[in-house]
Length: 523
Image (tube, rainbow, N blue to C red; front, side, top):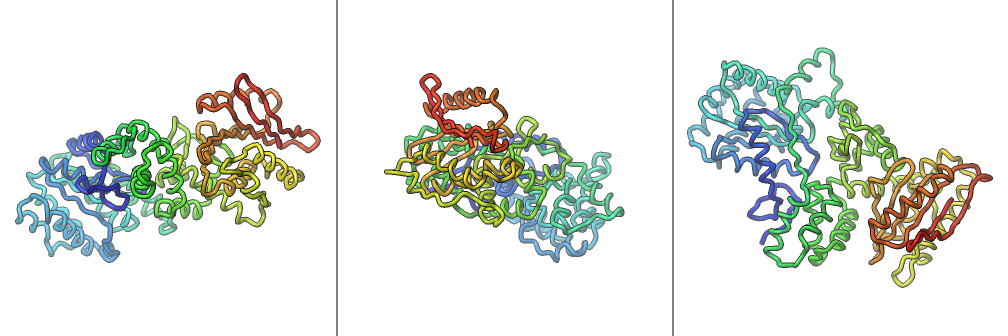
């Protein structure tokens, strides 16, 4: 019986998998044109599985050498001799179960090769009259080492000589890792393991400039997710609405491979096969309550890099907009880690799961910072009765506590933290039973829409900053449009007014707009 797999390599015989045949065709086109390239994607983005599937797709036309630097010892990168021997041993192991002649496989191991010049000559001999494709996974496990850079320089030299008709070498080379080899210094400098000297600049800038750009989208779109669900449905006959569930999974994950598979795994193994939109919602809640290496990496990267922290905090908490420009080191780093994507030229958080995860991180940081006076003392039992969440009472109590605690607080602090104050107030009230997310398309310096689910009820809350009376009607219209899109008759508007106390117009009132109504709160 197959299962959903989120650990290591996926196998079509053992695991439910998305059909990535269209992606493989695109990658094979690069191989067919003798391209060298790097598949650099964030952690748990399906790189290893993609290489495994590609190996199968290429094996009838090419001699495929698929190996990995995972687990290779540091000793192998200390001298050219050690690297050459380790590299050739990896090749022999990779060919152990390949459909190649035994003598050809055994001839790859040559124990008298101690220099890159000798390795170059050996590759020439082994690639003569053969189309050999070299794949190396986890290359950034060694990418901070000068020996590996020299190896890349050797491959580059042979590639250029082949173009001149003066050498034989690998038909195509594919390197896979989190970091782009062309930006190898970024990883090293971020880790603090290397400060390049002028003499090293040429060495570290040039070895992989022969590589073509890899533009294949490895994320899963809803039709691709549906291919995996169709396989599952064929085995289990749950009656799920496959297009609807695929779209819902994509809405939470934006197709991030690990997140897609983990949501499916949660539904299948932990949520009694509840293949409904509510089941996807509960799976997302379950996922966000667990610890895993992907989430740990995100927290670690935010904690260890102040510039990265400020970028993401600016986007989520302050509603700032940034142009997506490669060349900006912090944007490149956030993209490398998979935290952000390019959305129509603007930096956007990669998916709803990450957005909620990072909001929770920021809220936790606020709670543990002794300099912050967070709103406390409101109990869930004050707000929730017979399983129903009283949003009107929730907002009234928030307003009352806000007046009490922050009436004398300086506006710059509140402008930066007002929204986070409300989220930190809301989160413990719904903990365990409710769930919220931010609609990213409405998150900016003026507006943020929160969708909160509690049991079977959904609440639409718009948070706005005060920008004058003329924007008030516009706020109603924006919220009304969003309520129509969500098919709800009731909405909630919370406006933060950061003017001096004398000018503030505090209020809590109902506003009727046709057959819909809005509870309007100004603090």
